[in-house]
Image (cartoon, rainbow, N blue to C red; front, side, top):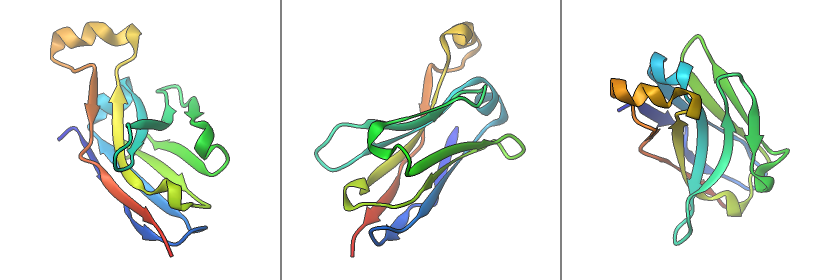
Length: 125
């Protein structure tokens, strides 16, 4: 597996949780890293992303509550979630997306994107 997630679990509304996603060094250094989520019966939505230049972008529904970060020493991307709500309940997926400027790497066997296996986050009383 190219991406390995951890850190999901159950938490009460208003609580906090941090998800981790470990990647290989090559993927971590070349790809935009992101977190998506998918609730039962719903589409998979982008939650937050961070480029290799460490520029981040957030979905409106998590703005001000979630924070994405990269640790270059361990090739790990984190999603720090706070003030969690019941509607944040979903399976969270780590994603790496190859920037257009790096599409030539597909000729070396790299994929346009990779997905983790998903980790469940449940927010309830």
